[in-house]
Image (tube, rainbow, N blue to C red; front, top):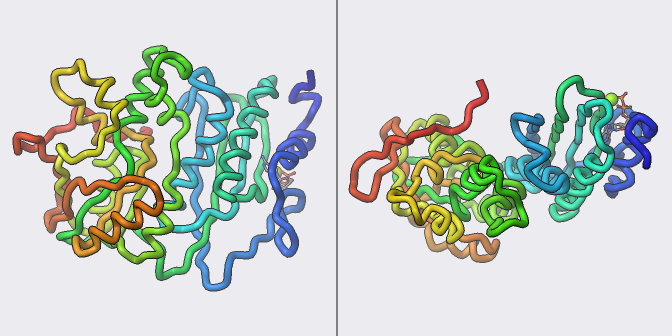
Length: 331
Ligand code: ADP
Ligand code: MG
């Protein structure tokens, strides 16, 4: 079987290129010194980048390589969704250790290609080099949207309802199960799948933005409390979250059923759900439910924006919740 050394840098780039449809003239993708891209007239280009490092963001033993490829693009798609923009192009940079299994790399590329096709996002270039450490995958994504529709973190207003899509805490609980040695394919893998194969809320993000119903939006990568905190900080306001209203999946509830207290910290501070959190005037409540129905993603009001500078979570007994963990921080 062919290995990475035999393939070489340019052989690998050819192998990558073969998996992805390429932009057509007047656009230009892989193969020149730079890509040429043509955003739609009147649109702003929305750009985001994410770095995934082995040992920090992923463990190759946790699941199929294909899912790691899907996730590498999903986390970037989620950032574009959180701006209310449409994903268009991405760049893929790889730092690969010598002797790295070509099969693993191919699985990863298959997953990336699958996710890219699902979201009609085109690979337009990248960079490839060796690594003295583990595998590093960097994706830079570009999307577009008309300036008037783009949603920032800074637009929340006191009195807004705070909404979240989908359910919270599943990915964090899935990671716990992986760390306990559980793997996909054994028993109920629903939570593990939410950790390994998150679904970016692209359609919901764009529909909400284009309906002009929402004041501020963010994707939940570091936990609701931390990410809602970013909205509040940039909007100059506070928030009150009602824990009783947090949307929890049936898989989450059954996995924690043996515990005396619900693990609120997981739902409130657990990362990597890649759901959307947004704030909107209460007058838009019914219209938002209708948009979410069109997108096929449930949405739930979990609290309200306040004029204070604090982000607080209220327990079912009315007392203020003190999380036992905060969102993930690197240093
Ligand atoms: P340069 O030497 O100018 O950096 P490269 O030889 O690295 O150019 O890249 C040649 C072409 O292959 C470029 O179009 C680049 O975008 C593309 N490319 C390199 N690595 C990747 C990758 N990992 N994924 C996608 N395209 C890549
Ligand atoms: Mg290069």
